[in-house]
Image (cartoon, rainbow, N blue to C red; front, side, top):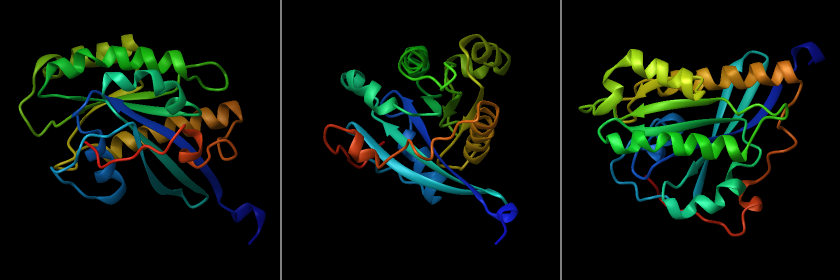
Length: 210
């Protein structure tokens, strides 16, 4: 195969963060395995999943998705978990306005603990999950949600449903497009930086999750 036809391969670490029970694991399971269940247990610490994307005929992308627990007591570990990430999803539950109120805390934590090589914040998409159910709060006003995301530095927001498979691929493709744009404009790549995630932690912390 000539060099011109060889695929470019990338490995990117993407975080999935937000309050407990907002559906982070359900989103990942739907995206990676096209599977949904109501019987996940709460994530303890962090869990991992890998999504392989044949982005185009010349580009193969491996997304290493880090499913971060929502419990407040794990906040002191997030710097370790966030290391080397190049993108993130923050998830809230549209049926619980309190989970939206916590979004800014997660965004502040993310921006304080990880940046791109050029010093800019990592691109972050806000997921308004469980949109197949009745909504509470600001998410009922799309114009205000657009303004909120612009003001708070989110790339974009999507209403999602892991149960009904709504907008999950679209949100992921939006984030990957921005990651590739950042990669090309800054001439960086994480292929050599992202390692076996279990080697970066003090101990291996896994569980079935939610």
